Image 1 (cartoon, rainbow, N blue to C red):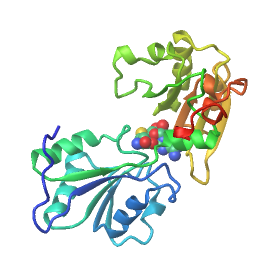
Image 2 (image 1 turned 120 degrees about the vertical axis):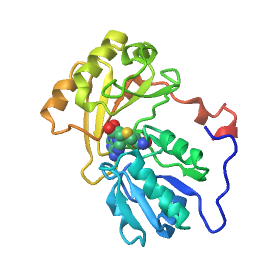
Image 3 (image 1 turned 60 degrees about the vertical axis):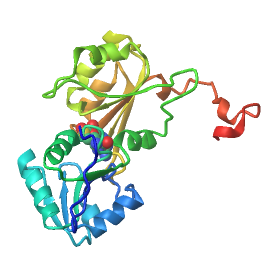
Length: 259
Ligand code: SAH
């Protein structure tokens, strides 16, 4: 990782890694919207970014779906050296399964400066779609972002089965095609088979779909649905309606400092 951030050469602009949000073009930050409008070159992750975000931009836009790391970085570096404003547009928040680390290291090695602008992760868009609070007092105060091991391995100490023992809220990315394995691991790890679980496909898109169930029903429900990818699995006791414990935050006796 970089120690000191390099400064842009004169006439050049830092490359911007930008969070596009989960899909709805209004769910990008104001700063992100401005940077897209001012950009000369945009390299976007076409498999998930909503291209409606690119309507009306003046930039040359490149879909990175078919490019490897070198191909992507060549576009970013070339634009930078030509003094262009370059945006690398990632779905959701770039820090979560964005593969930005290798891109930043590539830029570090060439002293090309960059900045990162956060975005609304699909985890939060999914929670919003489900209208749940992931941190319910006295139920759980912890949220885990994770995934089932697939082509990308997951370290054994953080297997779903191990994480399940914590009984927190979990947002499971990149795993809906493996829903049966997910369910088996979660139950083997300690979640009760009746634990509420939901799958949100394309959260915040016009064709968003929600399937709600319990650990022992969800795999069949997903099988019956058309949901195969771009979906978030949200699971944990916080999704249950049976919790009657209210937050002390709005309790009359609680200090108002954090409201
Ligand atoms: N950086 C992104 C995640 C990229 S990994 C973020 O913060 O959201 C891609 C995975 O994210 C998908 O497999 C899916 O699990 C999830 N995902 C991305 N967009 C989504 C959306 N609109 N609705 C539900 N899940 C989504």
